[in-house]
Length: 432
Image (cartoon, helix red, strand yellow):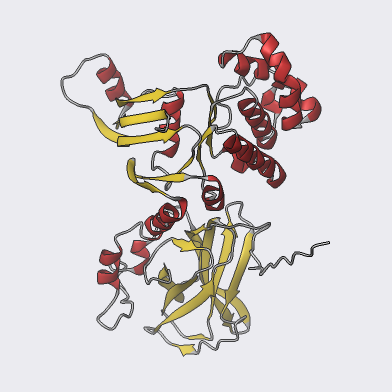
């Protein structure tokens, strides 16, 4: 028996017009010019895919790859520039926070609003109301305006509505990452129930462990194009390679590695500088007296590529080049990582590691190499570098670079907190 196709996307394009000036937008909209006043940006370009009844399909890709855009077009929130989408079955969607909700309405009023938009009568919503409120579990807040909700309460109610209107197709866009771990667990149990009921699920997530566990098939998007589709392990492995090799690794290596495989430094900070191959923070905070200066730095993954991306569990290296404009004794070179909220998570320096750096005079330079294993949880971290020391008995800052570049940690398994203790867990069954 042939499988029933419930979602079909055929040669989909989504193009946005980008204008340099607002007046160009106005002139173009009024037809006052024959010249093209905009640049074309394709969020999606010639994307085709099909999803069969009962499949759970994940869409993964880097930021800006078009994941959310394709879900919005499938659900009818956006119109495509070209191509066609066909849907067969009752569809329920949980997109970004706020989609489909009126902020001035209470939680209860929004339940009825969303149910009505999905084609249910008041009586039918009445029958489902108890299940919706029980699943959301936000107590008396259901009678408050949703503009007063935390993001966690909001996603609880939105997901409770989405799954209790009896959808044949459920579409979820990353929203579950907002809820707490217990609510996420409850949602994924619901996914398992839907799978057992042969319902169709399409979802976007950066949680690779969930993609691997729940998906029958995974689609990889990159820069608006479909790069590949297939079984979860195969596509997740490909996704990791896309992340690690965001830059042309052959170009990076040819410019920064000599015949012996050693990194070549660029004193002038030009295109061969290590840091020129990283994504840097344009508004970083830097200060110091300048007697010693950090002139170059990089992060190198375990394949030898300069990159901003590290796969959890892999080793990586940070190299720091320091040049001296005066006499310095035993400079201390420091490396630290913060999370996106600015909380310092971990760090070390040559003094902590009991490394003697030596004596330097004007014109000298040195390279300090930190090699570490990455066991932080998946996410974004900010790297700070420093060169400090003691000069005539006083603590002196020679050069500090705060939040100079980011590290994106890609994980297929996260635990609680900031750091994974790399546990080895065994279960012994004892039959009674």
